[in-house]
Length: 305
Image 1 (cartoon, rainbow, N blue to C red):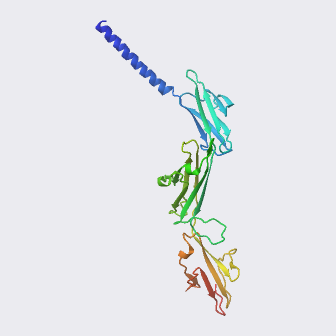
Image 2 (image 1 turned 180 degrees about the vertical axis):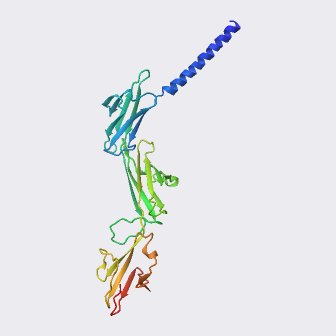
Image 3 (image 1 turned 90 degrees about the horizontal axis):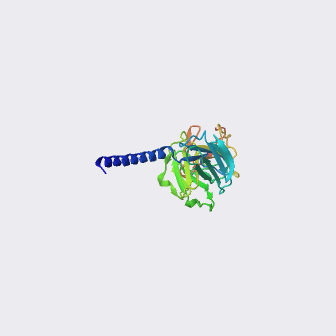
């Protein structure tokens, strides 16, 4: 073979090689097999309606016929049917959605997604004080500690997952709490530092170790200001909690009354507080053993308020 023929032969191989690379790059760039399914809501609970939407950059889903199956049953088929609505079952009951497409000139596309419905509850409490017998919730104030406890219900075909084996990702005001997140960390405690004008926002993402089931939830906790209420202390019936003293409280001439001061939502026990009583502009000294109680005697001929 002459030198010229060799050069032409090598040039032909080089051109063919470049064409093959270019053809492969075109196939990879424009004939990508990316058919995606998205859910709304992203992490549905049991017996909830879910919108499932198909998306792709490989072909026009609006002009291509899509075929939808739910739990192997045909539910919809036709051009422009880019989404369907399904209803999830009970926790631990899967709903499997399959969408397929056959755009002209390329191979068929198919995507399957299984929904495992789950639930997540967030309960919280604050370490603030409320009087004995108080039926309401102890509310957080600035300086108190808030504790949030997660109660997840995640299940697959193997049954419910032990909360201790799940992965927890806690966020406070959109900031990831790395040291308080991790496997089995279903309790999150933090100090409230901002006060009533900026309620804390807590978000939790919990999932199985293999990522098969994920659930998210967030709560915003209202912060209160501490309150101090006064109650008449009856000698036989004790504190009259059904009626808080408000405005002016009159003590008749020669009368005697005992008043109990109850701090609601104090960040600590009442024994840690300092009480200073004042009646008619005069500071009074209360019982050292019970500084929260004022025993007041009105002199004969005087009416105090």
